[in-house]
Image 1 (spheres, rainbow, N blue to C red):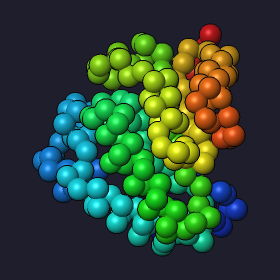
Image 2 (image 1 turned 120 degrees about the vertical axis):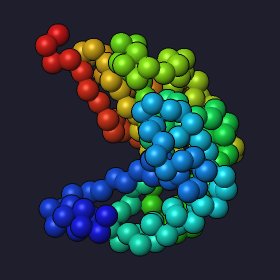
Image 3 (image 1 turned 45 degrees about the vertical axis):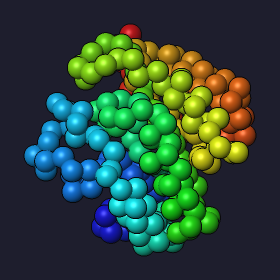
Image 4 (image 1 turned 90 degrees about the vertical axis):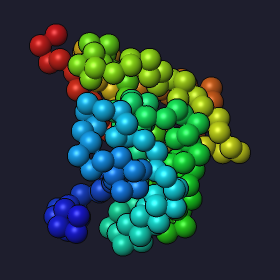
Length: 196
């Protein structure tokens, strides 16, 4: 990671790093587990301290180069997180948020990077398509006295470019109704069919 950070800094790029998954030694699944085929690979860690210690060390190491940190990738998809939204909040988001802030009080926590996709794309993943990103976002924003994110991020994989804009309007509407009106919104992953 040192080389990638140095490359980006030489080009005056701002860096956004996401803590995206759990290694097999931290959640007890076989190292050979293929997360595209087996949701068991995305089981929560057996101990939250594995996660928070790692997050703290990485943020401290790069605190002068990186100020934006993501707390998981698309946790509403079983491919990346096999538990529910409450487990994500209690085992990943909340402890990750505080580990980042403790390591660098100036850092911004970006999230929750929820997947918002066209149903045809979800069929490709061969997973349960009841991923209800809007319920996840509502629950995440309503948890605790204040939201555990500083910047609201979203992933939108939809049919047309205009659909992506409408999706972000929907995200903003949910945020406004659930204590997140003050949060900037970032689109951190997207794709759409350029032929339509």
